[in-house]
Length: 190
Image 1: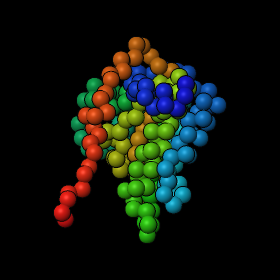
Image 2: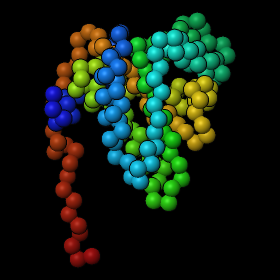
Image 3: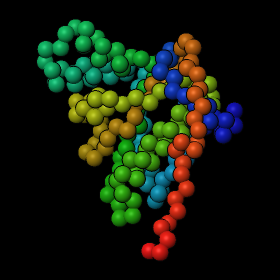
């Protein structure tokens, strides 16, 4: 699949199963991430791979975080929250490690980490791997951030759930570029 086809046909794959993609496929995805736009070549990102037993620990973190917010969670609520960490055989966490810089705002560095995540998603699609970008309350919860070892100033940009596509995939809906793009004409006489 060429780059334009991959960009034009990528869809999120919310339901995935094992096994974890081959190491060569994962390395290709990470290599794609490293080509993201990066003003100042700051590399304002890092990635955590969570798989195997690590997923159970992530589920424990999610449960601990939810209990910190609401001590009287029902068993169903606990199981639902734990299950969110176990939806894929691999979770890749994108962490922005943006720093103050005189020419590159923190926002731009966070966006660069997001671009790196998008590059991994497109690479996954091109390589036949199922992946979906998720966040939600656990992505910014202090218990989860501490448990994953985030340093002060770091933040989770994405949790990519990665595996083999499971079940039928949704259809690609055509989008009209003209619905989103307009030509700007500067006012005359200013």
